[in-house]
Length: 70
Figure 1 (cartoon, rainbow, N blue to C red):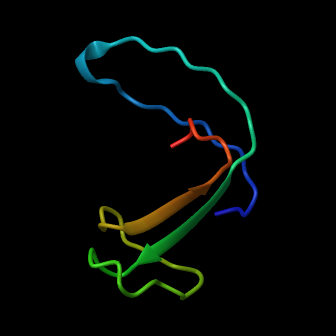
Figure 2: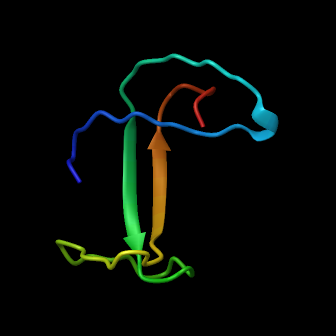
Figure 3: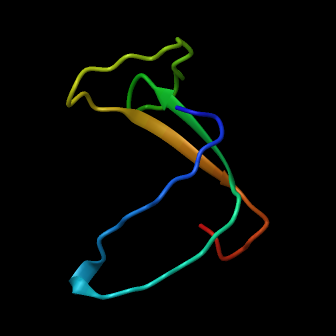
């Protein structure tokens, strides 16, 4: 993964509700992978290779001063 990148997020809403949201900005996000669902031991190896259909355990944190951004 690149340290600095541009992403597009696509999501499906419940009950087929149509929502249009457009926004732009820069956000600081950190992501860490873990070796199990206990999230006690982070993966430090680089590169981190995984198999197809392997379950990944990731913790993502967003750092922003915008209180409406979750």
